[in-house]
Every structure is written in C-alpha cells, then in structure tokens.
Image (cartoon, rainbow, N blue to C red; front, side, top):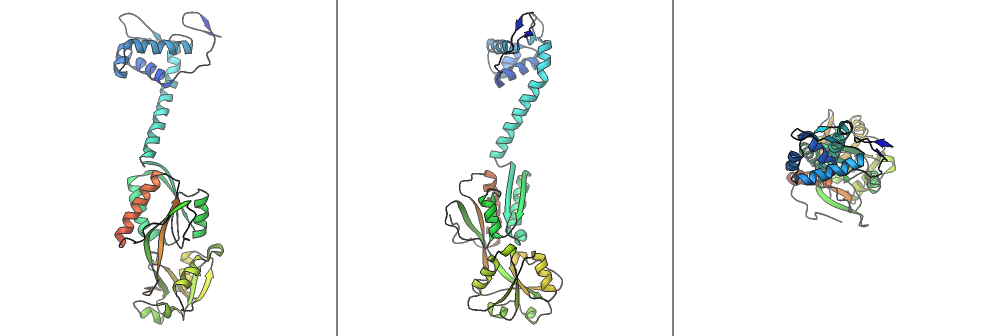
Length: 321
C-alpha cells in the first residue's frame, strides 16, 4: 500500500502511463505552468490538467504543488519520477531517430561478400562512395569463393555479394545482376620469353604451367579458364592458397597465373599481360535475396553500378532474376 500526498492509502495500480501522459508531465515540469505547457503542446489547458490528473491517479499521489498566482512546483513524487521520465522519452526518441535513419539509408549494418581480387575493381570505388555518404553504416566484409558466398547468402549471413564465376541461378530466390566484365590477364616472370609480348592468346598459354586457386576444392576457377580456352589444352595446377601466395609462386618460377585485370597489382619480378582472345573476360555479378528490401543494400548497389558504368560501356544483358 502507498500513501499519497493527501494522506490517503492507495493500492499500486497495474496500469502504466502512456508516452503522451509522460510528455505532458515533462512539459509542465519544464515550463512550471499548465498554460505554457498547453501552448507548447498545442492543446487546451483543461486537456493538460486532465492528463496530469490521470497520471497522478496512476502514481498514487500529486505530481505538482498548485498555488494560485505562483509557478507550479514538483512534489516529492514528481521529483522522484522526473529523471526516469526524461531518460525514457530520450530513449524512445533515439529509437525513432535510428529507425528513420535506417529507412533513409543513413545508419544500420550491411554484410557484403566479394570474390577475391575485386578489391581494386569498380567495387572499391562504389564502397568508398557509399561509406562517404553513409559513414554511420556498419559494414562487414567477407572475401570467399563463389560457392562459399552462395552458401552465406542463402543462410542470410550476407546481404549482398559481388562475385565472379557465380552460377546462373534459376531458383527465383535471388536476384542476379551482371555489373561489368573483367578482362583476364596472365601473370608470368618478367624474364620469361612471353613477357616481351604486349598481349597473349590462349594458344600462347598452352606451353605454360597454369597455377589456379582452388578454395577447399572449389573448381570454379578451373572450369572458367578451361571453358574459355576452347580447344586449347591447358596444363592447370590447383592450389588452395591465397591470391598473393599464388603470385609468389609465379615469381619463384613455378608457373603462370591467370587472374582478373583488377587483381593484377604490380609486383617486382612479375609481368602481367592481357589475353586478347575470345572469351578472355569474366562477368562480375551482384547477387542478393529477392525478397530483401534492405534500403542500405540498394544504395550500395547504386554506388557500385555507377562506378561499373564509368569503367566500361553498359552490359547489354543487364540483369538476370
């Protein structure tokens, strides 16, 4: 049992005040006037008085001392609840602001997967532009093979992926959009006879030992290279190593590496030569869940599209569902 300001015993009510009542209480406490609080809230003074009266019933006692001709003052009950009311309303306002910011693509989080080697492609420019426009968005990146990116996308660990060598999906569960085509280049030792050539063809590579990455048995790179070489027999070796380790193997004279143009970062002892032949490119796709309406993903995708379009002419087959 509680004793109120008038000395009456009252039982604690199971009802709770609503936010309108708490905001009215806070306005009266700050303005020290029912009339001024009513003016700031855009309601009548009787409406404010009725709201405070209902709130006092819930709290079991008066919240304000009312003296004719003098500003209202908080009672002990009013002083006790004031800090909590301020904190509660501040927290609610923050939650609403964050929700609005997320809806407007200004805050939130986004998990982005990408194929190894795309960090120097139009993807990097798109990410940089997105981060500059939305610095409060928390970005998390995953670099992985196409099959691993596909798995994490299906499990909703990732919001979107940017990848090469992704299978053309027909399930309808995702959207798959071709953004740009990445030329293929060959990395060879700079003292190799082929390094004197400005460019190479598939037939030139038949005499080389081709080093390819195979992430935990993923044969996507092997299938892509051999299918593009057509009738030309290629001697391919698969290694479960990082891209930088593969290039180091080239520097050691263990073979040549076929890689994306954007991944051909200059390195001592290595010469990168473009392949000028049919099918000497790899399409780069953006893939995301079809039923996902995440506005942050759409904004990032728009930034990457912009940089992809600036890097080359638009792809004729723009999208695949």
